[in-house]
Image 1 (cartoon, rainbow, N blue to C red):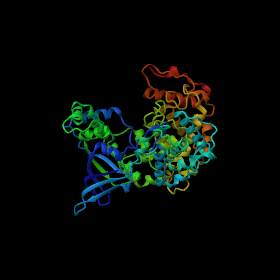
Image 2 (spheres, one colour):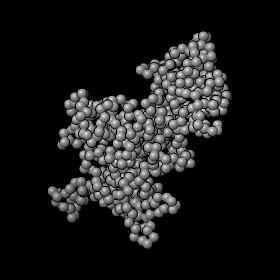
Image 3 (cartoon, rainbow, N blue to C red):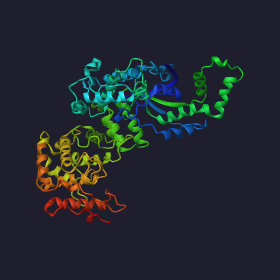
Image 4 (tube, helix red, strand yellow):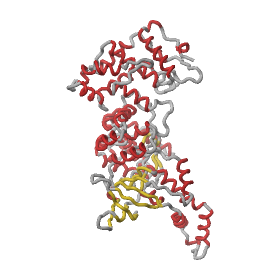
Length: 572
C-alpha cells in the first residue's frame, strides 16, 4: 500500500516531536489509520484508548457532510503506530514543505489467525516482559470451548495442552487466574490480560482446519484487530472520519450519484457491460464525493504519548466521563510506558494517581471490588459501584481525609493521620511526618493493603456474594451495603474507633484485630433486612445519609439495644 500527500512539517518547540499537516480523502484515511477502541469483546476489555463508536453521532455527521458546502476546520489527530511506514520527504531548503509518504504491507487479505499473531508480536515488542506471562489452563479451555460452540465444531472438554503450538508456551500448571496476578498486578494494566486473550484465541484458531478463516473468534473481529496493525493511530476524530466515509459511500444512492452511475454504464464513451468491474466503478464514483479531511500527524510512536494526547484533547474540549477517563489513563500503559508522561498528566490536572489506585482495585484478584465497579465502557452493569464512589472511598484511606460521619464535622481519618500515622511501623522508613505520609499514600503504598483488608472483612461479615437480590448483596448498589452511603459510614466510623481507642496500625494483622474489636457484639444481619425508603426518596439524599449514620453509630456503640427499626427512622 502506497499513499503520498503534499504536506508541511512543523515543530511547536525545539524539544517537541514534529507535526505533519496535510489532508487526504476520508476513504483513504480509513485504510491506513486505525482506531483502537476501549471496548468489551466477549466480556474482555481491549487496551485501546478511543471511546466506542456512537452510531447516532456518525449518522449526524454524515448528514452534515451530505451538504457539499459544509466543512469542518478542526483536523483529525493522528500519531505513528509504525515509524518505519511513514516518512516526510522535503522539497524545500528549510525542510518544512514536502510530501508525507505512507507505505506499508496491506493486512486486508490476512487471515484472522495471522492478524492475531502479528498483534501478539507487536505487543511483545512493546513489552518484552509479556513473553513470561503464562496462560491459565482454565482460560484456554474456556476460549476453546466457546470457539467450538461459536463455529459449530466438535470439542472435547478434556483439553490436551500438549497439542498446543509450542510457540505459545502454555503453562499447564496455571489453572487459576490468581497464578497470573503477579504479572498482571505488577503492571497495573489491562495489557497483560489483553495479551493473554489474544494468545488463547490464536491457540483456538490453530485447532481449525487450515482452509477456514472466520471473521471473528470469541468476540475478536478482523476489523478490531486490524486497528492495532495499521501504520497510523487516530488519536481524535473517529466520528468525523466515519461520518465522512459514510457520506461518501451513501452518495451512490443520491439522485446525483445514480445519474453518474447510469452515465458510466450507458452514457457516451461507456464500455462494454461485460468488461465493467462493479467494485472499481463504485470506488471511482465514491472518490468523486470523497471529502479531503485535514490531518495533524504527530511523529511519535510511543503509546504513552498517544494516551497523553487523547486524554488532554478530550478532557480539555468535551470532557468524557470520569470512569472512562480513569480507566483509560490507568490501564492503557505499563508502568514503564506511563512514567515519561505521568508528571505531564498531573500538570494537566488529570488525576492520574487516583485513577491508578482505583483501577488496581477494580482488577486485583485480592480486591473485594474486583469486577464490581463501573469503568465507563459500554456494557457496564448499572448495579455495580460507580467509579467515583470507589474513588471517594480510596481517598479516605489513601489521603486520610473525608472520614466524616454524615451530619458530623470531625474528620477522623485526618485526625488519625495527624496523631497516629507517624508512629505506625507501616511507614517506619520516613524521617518526618510528611515523608511518612508520602510513603503511606503512594499508589501502591501501605494504605492499599489496609483498604483491601478492611473492605474484605466488611464483605465477609455483612455481605453475601451469591444472591444479588439480597438486601446485603455485595456487588449490587441497589442493596443496603454495597453503596456509597453505607460504605462511607463504615469507613468513617472505623477511623473514629481507631482515634477513640488510640489504635496505631503497625501490621496488616492489626486491621483484623481492630475490626473484631470495633464490631464487638454487632450482628452480621445488620444490612440483611429490607430498608424501604418513602416514595421519591433516595439513599444518597442528605436526610437519609444523616439518619443512616446516626442509626449505625448508636447501634455500634451499644449493640445490646438491638437492631434499629429502620423503617420508623427514615424521615418522610
